[in-house]
Length: 163
Image (cartoon, rainbow, N blue to C red; front, side, top):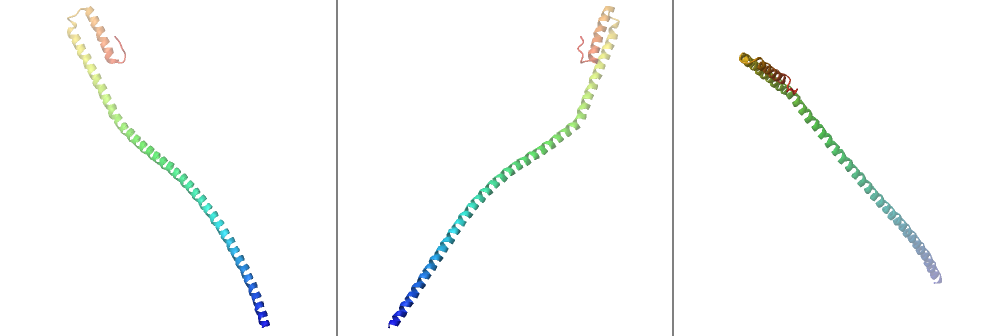
């Protein structure tokens, strides 16, 4: 019996050692798991920080791109407005160029009509002077000729203020 008790004691010792070894292995495994968890938590925190930084960078770049797009759009609008303004200006200038000859013709016609009227007035005045020539004295003739010459000068040279 002693041998069986001895055998049991040895088995108990072996089992205790095995239990101790398993306990140490479990503690080592647990420590390794804790270390892995710690490393993973740190990696997750690092990844979160990286993602936050990436998000901030993206938002900053996006904001910059939006600002650039806004300026680009504003510049495009201004350029289109300038093009439209130039087109309208060219159209107006073209219309004015077409109207200038008409206006010039009207001015020329009015100038001719004015000159014809002036000539008719001079002719009528000369005719009237001839009719009454016989009825006036030499002094009156000189005075009337002076007046006639002054009127004639005024009609021929309207820009000069001759009295």
